[in-house]
Length: 145
Image (tube, rainbow, N blue to C red; front, top):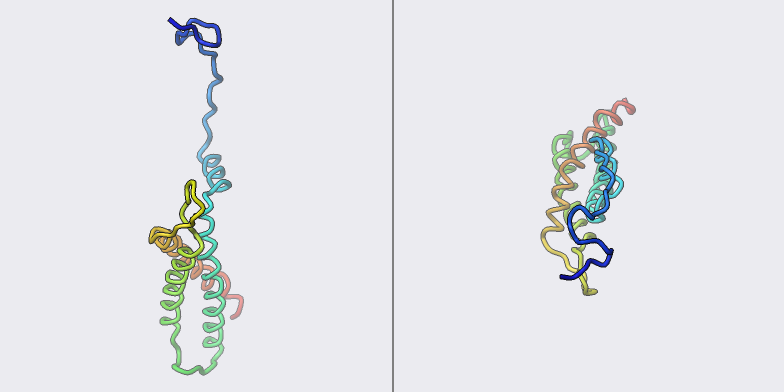
């Protein structure tokens, strides 16, 4: 029978007493998850926010121009502009995420991409597009009359 390196008999009662683990609140857990989000998730959301911001500026400009009586070719196409905005955020955000978020390479130096990176961008783009529309039409649009 071998003797453990710490000099005890090797039974469960020889283990040192650990202090009780403090249970974190829901808010503490979510705050910790927010502070240490995985890099691919941060990149996917950032890519979609950039695309949504650029598209949102164009959409807001178009809406304000039409609202102030500007006559543009094609007439009032605000509904189509909203659909185009959402499709732009989804498509370009997914492609940008695919290009910007490689999978972990493991031990090698080769950077790999798969359709899953694009799917990550797709799933990140849906709430970003929705929040962008809310900010454009509920927050920013009233400022311009």
